[in-house]
Image 1 (cartoon, rainbow, N blue to C red):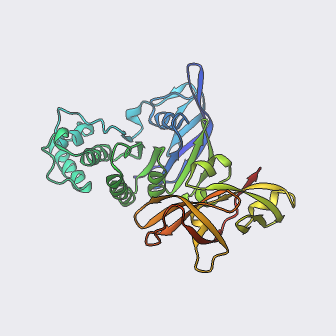
Image 2: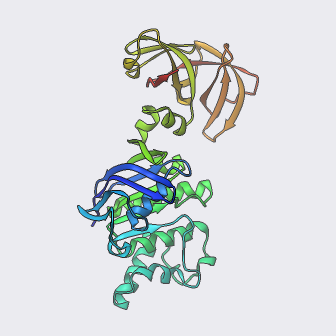
Length: 347
């Protein structure tokens, strides 16, 4: 049965350092959420605290309304019904895949243990692989075994620490989809920590962007990308550049690219100078362009090409073109502004 997770105003410390400060979030049963941020922001410490491996200085952690961590108190990890999946898989090399999956099922009768091993090998797409040793498996197969081992005891909560970072991009995307579908199918409440935006956006219902031991924005992937609340989130999430702007009225800003409309200008005085976030999908190719720009860099991405374009002022912006619109560095291209979200910050 999936669990509700409540993390309330927790602080975690190491000698001489506060790693997590007054951090909180809730996870509804069956939801999959992600803590996203750069190395050193405290996200793994939060995961360790939820698992019971790191004490709290202040705050509480509750699983299904039961306090499992507080200042001066920590329920033993094995009593929390929490499963863990690690970056490096952490499989036992001397055990077969089946024995690894059975590692958390020792208290069950042999027949029931064997049935669950086969069931979860099948769930992760590795039926028939139970007799193989970890060194006989690919990286993706090892990660599937690690997932099966974490899920077999039927935890109330699954924690995943950078589970796909050691895999190549194609495999990471494929396995990420499989894991997402499996967790949703099983209805397991899950918390993922990662520095990779693709993993966060592909898997999570909600994402908490962390910076300096705090969550600076807790939101859907869509809103994090299109409506970042701080300059750090705007810089960290997705591609984009800031261009000069001047407030025209409550809902619009004049830029070199044209007028950008939305609601984020309401806190600024008219005629104030601001920085306006422009995403690559805000500038599109046009047969009847309002702007012309020079290609200074290009990055082929399969279905799309990401161009760096220099405007007449010398400012550079990013733009996504369909991949059949193949232009050389130095070419002049026609574009127009197609921004549907206004994101501005003080200059």
